[in-house]
Image 1 (cartoon, helix red, strand yellow):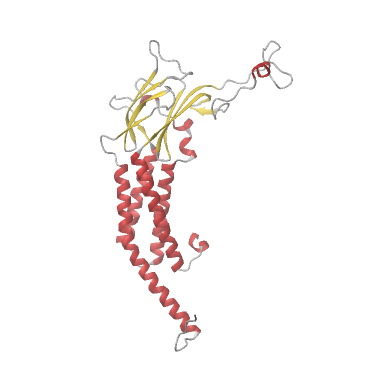
Image 2 (cartoon, helix red, strand yellow):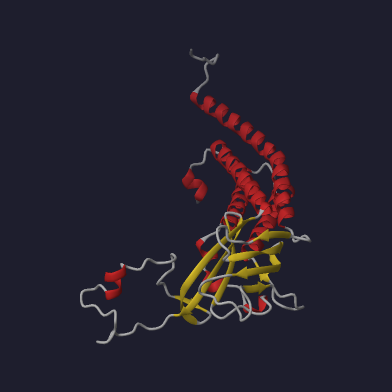
Length: 310
């Protein structure tokens, strides 16, 4: 079926009508965004409420599932860990004399340093910045200026995506040798050569415990060494077979507190945090909604990806 315009329009007039139609569609789209901004603000405010430091906080169990290696809990208030008590039974960490486990207790001494989860602090800051972007888009500037709204939406999407990435966890957040908990966080302090690293991954609280040892320089074998080998295989390996690594960092050397160390034993414990899971879900939905707006505006403004990224 063909559609005819009568009387026939010239090419110039037809182009003018097309531009007028796109202009009206763009105006309608920009006006509809004002209602959407209200919904975005509500979602961001819910995230801010879930991340706020409210007493009594969230008490989370940190215990190994199929062993007695780690048993305990921590209490999170906002981005701070304010309380915790953990019992350790590690083969490479002998307990104190007269005890059957090593106990780690968060210090309650006034003025003692607190364990702060920088990831959560960054997420909360980004959520607050996103709220500022929504307010600027609503009350400042021309809401019918397509370039202004397009820029604000892209900035909003960038903030939300970054906040979500912090909750998901990045390789930088897992660099334990740079961000292990300070000894003064605990009372009494940590045993020597024990790394306590707490981070967020996939909206869950993840604890990595590592017992360490100095990275001694390689020793030159002597004629009296029991494992000397001229063929590349030691006597021990030929009798018992090659020794398999006990964890994924076996043999690596790390710079920890000014000293080169190796990891003897590594334990990972995870605890699901309902509040953080809810924030992650809300941020994912908000990110998707903002991206839909950006794509819709790009189509109506007749922009390609190269123009929009410039």
